[in-house]
Image (cartoon, rainbow, N blue to C red; front, side, top):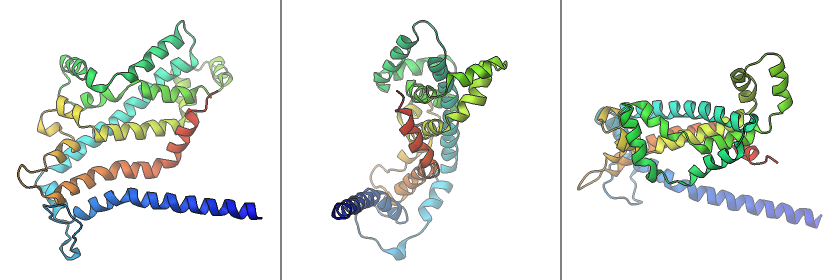
Length: 273
């Protein structure tokens, strides 16, 4: 009984500690939201609730064309999620379920590309996109997000799909693409959700690539637009925080709705024996 009580006490203490740490982690976001309702030009902890208003949110949509930038970010992020899941799934299927000479070595070389910083490949990728005539397009903003990480993540999960299931489908006359999209992908839904969240957050928060590949104002994303809210001499931090809150909410809401599948996908993708 004493051991059980001691363990219960430890669990309660750990739960309380985690709750306190979670509250501390939320403080910056709460402060960001509160400042977004003010007209502060200096950041401090002095708030007058009577001065709170939605004027900053009205200004970023009416005076700064934030709706257009929000639409661009949404199109790019959703499109990148779809492209990354489809292309990475097809590549992972080949590495996990097809037998060909040098498969494991090719996969190792493919994974090695993850060690190359994005800044190193920035200029070559820019030249490729420019030569393809894709400058200032949504597609140009989507393509660089497709990399070896998604293939690795999905391959780990696909290896758990029984080969006997695919052999049975093949004997019934099922083609490779149909097996992939009708049999394999429904079985690996959690890892696809995980990759979707990773991809969405990466594209949504990306700053450098949109700055380089989409210089035209109509193609700018939300992160670039928020950077323009800062003044040269004085800054309305309420306006900046309103834009930051607007940028923070979509990924946060996406994660809240998909967190169960996200955790399941991450946990199971690393348990292949």
